Image (tube, rainbow, N blue to C red; front, side):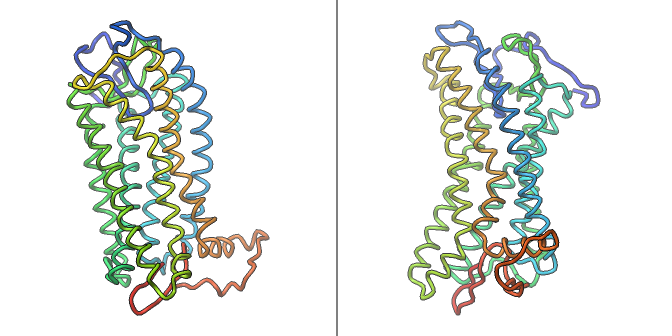
Length: 366
């Protein structure tokens, strides 16, 4: 397929033994109700209103919040510590993911009008930055676990390039995970959806679709969820035994808030997607009504949008939970009329922008 010349496929041109399914809010169901084709007008109407409104809100709030995070980090770029570097890459991933949302919003209203090349590019960028953001949260949790529980510094704080190289490896791994999107994403005209052209993955078999879903569930949710729960459970138990428990708990508030936000934002979508996977898998398929199919389509749209809110929740948490972030931000905004309640010298150049620094003989909590 020539990516330089946009190619629009019609569903009549494709093999009906293949499975048409999108992990970007849309689900194609060949039949239900004993072989009757379901009317998808209701879910399409819901998408055309819900997606543009919510995506616009997520885009504005997310770009503003992540922009402030990047400005603060740029101002203190000479003294970035390990956590700051991870959050820098996290904010970059969130920002790039947000930049793909306008394309999906246009698709919900008018269909995919950007051609095959942008379909593959936009889908791949979405997948890369989705995985990268989640993996950065996992790296932060592992670094905190080793440094607080075992007093082991996973990265040299005097050599930030080591941490940047680790982040680069994460980016490269996420690029590898996007290879299926480069191969299978196409702009597809579906006569069952009012001949609307949509950017969706066209898998050659049900097995490909199932493997793609399993890979997402494992790497995009289960693995980081287990790592975060384990690491922060151990950290909390360690803090309870410490002599400076209250101070250390304040230091860990930001990360705990980030983990809670991760579960609140992404758990509903993963549960809904598992139900959709089981419904469309021939091994576990069961008869469903057209109403339940429509409800599932709407649920996927709603819960996936809740998941994308994660991109703008992170910087909000930094601003309202991270004491040091608020102090650094107020220093930057002081020329605009904002005033610090405490002395400006309260902000230490060696401390993280996101929390209190606590130095003990056993651990250094950011």
